[in-house]
Amino acid sequence: MDWGMQNRLSQLMPGGKCFFMPIDHGYFQGPTRGLEKPGETIQPLLPYFDALFCTRGVLRAAIDPVGSKPIVLRVSGCTSMVGKDLANEALTTSIEEIVRLNVAAVGISVFIGSDYEKETLKNLSTLVNQCEDYGIPVMAVTAVGKEMEKREARYLGLCCRIAAELGARVVKTYWCEKDFDKVVQGCPVPVIMAGGPKCETEAEVLAFVHDGMQKGAVGLNLGRNVWQSPHPVAMAKALRAIVHDNVSLKQAQDIFNATKAGK
Ligand code: 5RP
Image (cartoon, rainbow, N blue to C red):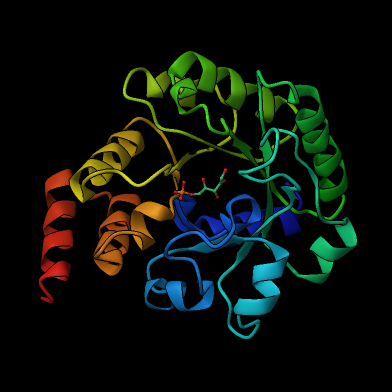
């Protein structure tokens, strides 16, 4: 592997594991609850995550370029929650902009099985062609739009494999209760778990993340279940311990409870 590619991947995944903090939600859903001021949202969470996933707009407006965490730049978009079809995404950023912003990786959604399957997969291929020339890893996001029921192993496994075959260096997908290990095993590149809409309890989040890590995921890209929680720092700390310190679920819950109690 080229030095630049390897260096970027190692920044993103110290020790081969990662906790990315997504704050890109505004790119299709506007000022999401908890993200009205993204720079302020992430401030207390900085010690716990490895990289920030955001658009160039938020990066320029809200993130200090001096001493910043590695950036995974969201480079697909041009659709909205109120538009006709969330899947109809385009590439939003040129390779010159990606290089200028000195990002560690880029992230792009693919909508497999949608009316825009081919277009979004073509976006991925184009991006891989551009980014590989500069040693910049591409993270493919297997997106489901509003169809959250699609999150089962056969579909997710298909999506991850296709994204990897087209050249994604890392794939982000949803955890699923049954056969998540098969999703991971069928994908020749590292798999990162997505968060999804806010779960009812923090315990639920810790449990699925712990299970996914045991089944071979290399990490997380999980936002709302952290910064929409009443206890974001406790959540971030407990999740970091699962990802990087391989703690048991019980230990993660203890970390969450102790941090929440201010201990
Ligand atoms: C949307 C994304 C977002 O980055 C990510 O899913 C948001 O994280 P979370 O769901 O944990 O709030 O890729 O497709």
